[in-house]
Image (cartoon, rainbow, N blue to C red):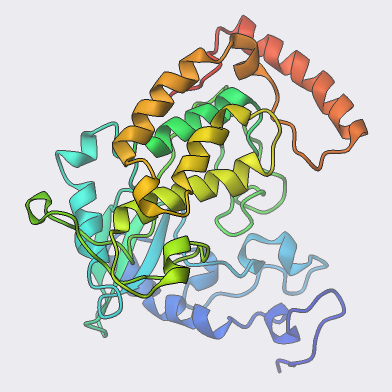
Length: 336
């Protein structure tokens, strides 16, 4: 019989150690046969009749692949449940961006939608089937050149992990037994994707500048949203989001990216009218980054909170790693 007290090894209810699924996981267990009929096989944890592999052993559930309570996923793809009532545009926009001619455009960095599955018992919910991705900054960027290539791709609108990784415990191997080995971005140039179009809209150029009432996304710092609830042009807001992400995740975290200060400062200007357009950002950046020297691009990204001892050891290791990249003729800006 399952117990509901807390286990001494953490804050996970005891019943999950005994093999019970979390309530939200039962949805995937019940859906598993239907998905398998359509060519998608979920993890063993979600198969009917599943028994925990750690039962009757000395293993801890976090050391077993089927013991990790995950987000929604398949083995090599991700399922995203979407309410077409709450987000009526997401499927349409995702399909448009995944269809030709946009699908083969190298400037298209929107996550491809492989399939759209209508749930059998809910006319207002679908599953989007997408590739298994990682957060863009895990593993960390190592060099200025790697950051420059990331900026180039996100302004423009190869696998790091040769043996894949666990979809929930993304720093570990598929069986959760070891840390997942990985390459640097310089060794395996990486392609980045924009995801999640639930709050997106599609506009026709012939209709002129659109106006939208404020929609609060993950970034709550948009200046114009704090000043008024009036409808405004959403494109300068997108520029702010992009600039603020670079400011918070790069400029405020690492040394050595001062060359981005002026451009990012304009992108996050309090006055939306004074922000550059997307085309102007691309033009400015295309002029900016070729002026960076070989040694600047090869230099290590140093975190602002890094200790002096860590800086010494990582600096020495960086010299040897950079020598390997140079001898292998890998470019300082790793374009896939």
